[in-house]
Length: 339
Image (cartoon, rainbow, N blue to C red; front, side, top):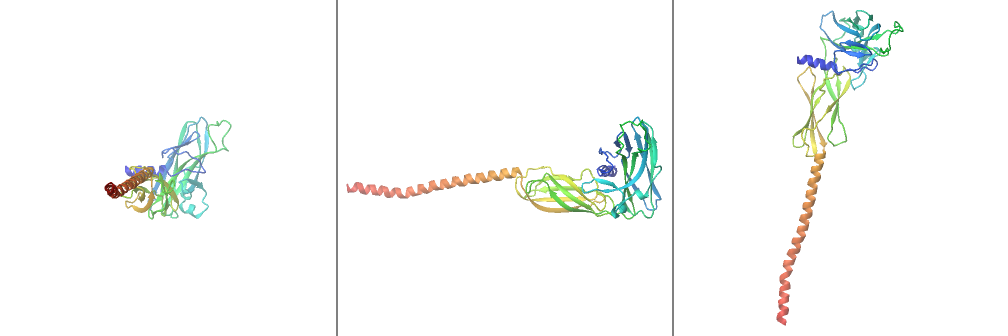
């Protein structure tokens, strides 16, 4: 149950395609664009050693009142940048070919006719040829309205410029490698002030998709944990040999009264392992509460010093007065005796 939940969350948060525009609802079940919906939106496939092929079904639904001729195609995708977005790209570079999947995907059919208010299922096969290396491979099955076959009866409720797709994450066993490295951590907000977020930039050194999970804690100079944030609670993933930035929110759970060197501890791991990697650093942090407390202490010290200084002057005057008073009395007595 827990593993299936983690797997569904892993799939849910990864993708924001840039070439084929898709709206993510947070669910892995279906995606819908312009009267067309597809399910599943994300498909995870595991290929075992010796397995000839792996197959799955995709359901495409036409919710419009028009008959829609559809073209089917396959394409590879890769990371667009370190934000988690992906691009659907032709296999033009070595990295895309290395982790591509389209060359091993076979469609049951490459064209269908969708009647109004109907659905069709299409079978997709992944051939486990020797050329398919162990590790992660990433492709998509794209369904798009065939403009060449549409006629004037098609209503404008369908947007021909967009497509629906199923993203496929294939993992071939027998040589997969998982390796995750934290390359940078950056605090948000002005320097020295308590950060609302810490941005973690991870590098996936492995050959299969993965996701960092863990926590960040902040302890004050006397060791109290004043803040704790979860790393990647949505369990979104990073593709092989790419970077991704994860923003971790840091709620203030305890008031940080004491400014100074706070301890920031970052603990993370790969979901497939139980061992954590720990990074500890010292950071000077101050909060409005600490500023207020410091100003209050300084004000009390100032008032106290001023009071003691004035009191010291009064005491000094009193002592001087007590020293000179007997002399004055003797002087007055002498004057009286002379008279």
